[in-house]
Length: 352
Image (tube, rainbow, N blue to C red):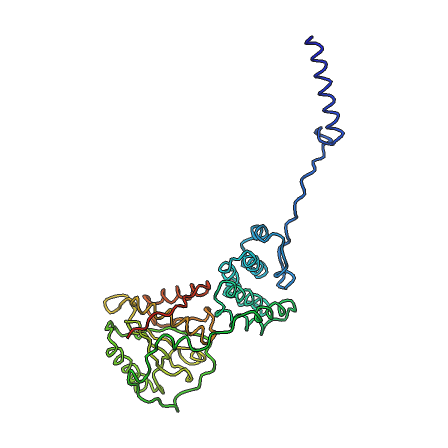
């Protein structure tokens, strides 16, 4: 009986092998493996054009995972577009920053796409106030017809900027409140539209948080600038005292005298009162000063469409200890946060 079972089992095995061979599933030398169909990987973008950067995708997440971590403009810009498709506004801004703030200046076409994508990220991220400069700049530079059309679509849906001045909402203390002397207009130059902000310290140890003491301190700075340096007025446009009050310095219609020569052109000068160096003669900026500096920078960005990439320290323009090693990291952090597209628009209650 077992003999017949063995023969039957052998016949069944032979039939199965025969079927497998006919189907092309068995045999080492004759097997033909047919893989399941999968979508071929998208080719890496190698040009900065609407067809390459803004092309629709069937699976943004998968394509993003396959893109290499590269700062090459075609790849970084495609990455920004895919992040936007996934609703990741901050990640898109980070990707555009690789192009805008690389060691080498981007070509006009590359900057146009980066500005468009960053402006779109600001809009989608809920901070349309910061989109204006990037979209306007993209419009100026764009030559690609596909990009030009996209920019027009965003501009048509972008909310209108709020009326009024964001800086005024901070409760800025006027020149009259610190008893400024009259400026000498013959020593002043008109300033065109502001495009950047530079932060300084007064380089004088100062911790008194009373408004009267701050007024005297600002008077002393104006006197030194006018009598000692021959300026037409105090050199800074705004000053911030230890209590976080913002004081008006030189009116913005006049170019400042704070960053040396041509560096003052279209440059808003902000001075934080204090001496922010290390050692016995130095001090840390107060928490109120840091908060007021951030609010003032954001308000100036809103009022003048200044991008976060145009926030500077005095030491960025010349070899100087200003604004001090204890304040410089604060400025860098504020600029980095604002480049991430997450500015705080709530205005702090001004100090009395």
